[in-house]
Image 1 (cartoon, helix red, strand yellow):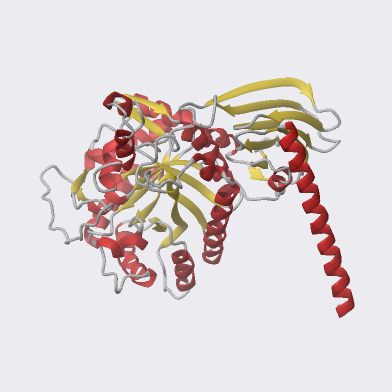
Image 2: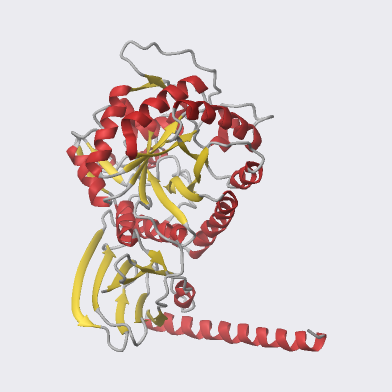
Length: 519
């Protein structure tokens, strides 16, 4: 193109940008005046996006949870009920910081081995070693069968040996059978230089060498063993480095998934961990950047990628942020954003207060916050512990928390193929903080999810499915009295009326989610 041609093209681009900015400014001005935005979304019919697996929804627990064999047990009817209410085909991931201090106890008379020395660091788990027994693994197998879930089983690397790891893996594989998806060796290995390895020599290459030694020993004991790796805390560049090194490895173990963790922020005492910051578009942009790096590495290795541990606020969550309705909108939006980036699933971390507290040094910062604010012991006990847990434990009772309702809400799309359409930018051009996703379900239905994370402004939408599209409409609403409510609800409604000329009008109030399914 000639210089003159480039100049004309740049002028056109500048003019389009100016007009777009002007239109956005006008729309935002109208929004502020009316409190409601009106948008027409055109929904493509072609399912040309990533596939969202049936087992996309998942939870993450500390391996230390297995110390109580009655927890993950076919007799724990309350916990089984909540798992099944969340998803009929979920994935339970066992790992966490405590996984680095477990040892395999195959028989009641087995003696505790000598353990490698570790450095004690504030915020990291103390070296409190514990046994995982054969009874706990047998009960876990029964629990998985009762729920219909599968398992990602974490085996420690920090203080383990290849021989012990292989012995545990062999028993777990035999006992869990087809309920075992793959093994994970090591947890948040990018942070090992803090307390488990020499910071002068520890890096992605050193990790990979050690991982290969353990995984190959496991593969000798379990020839069909599959693995996920590296399960980093935050440094997704390790995924890039491992992907670059992978082609040079002769006859590598069978890796199916690259894995990483994600927490929005933390700890609870950090004032930046707030509802507005959790839900703002800039947070979504940061997630997208991580996803771009992770999926590029996974594509290079020819595998999928999964977020295997994460939540709103690390070190146990923040009361008033992690345990309220805002967390439901966050988990729904976060899950669908990763699904649209070809992730195979998400596992939100939780469990009992004791196991999570042990994983972060012995206490939950959120408890300190409540005490400093003058909360009584009864008020503190009424909160879920940890504060971010999707399934709360109150004595022998279990209940789904708001953050779990976000997962459940988008779980209706599991098994669907997403539709590539930039619906979110069309909504956000009005100034409303909302996102939208579309998918084609297994039965051919089209579903649209709109998440209005705005604290003040409603959305009035016209959904245009095309003139040739007809069918009855079903809706589901994710709602609560407010973003800071300690509750969440999903309300379903069926409408017999079919689309009119392929269109329908819906309203999405502020601080709510709407799922529209055209059957």
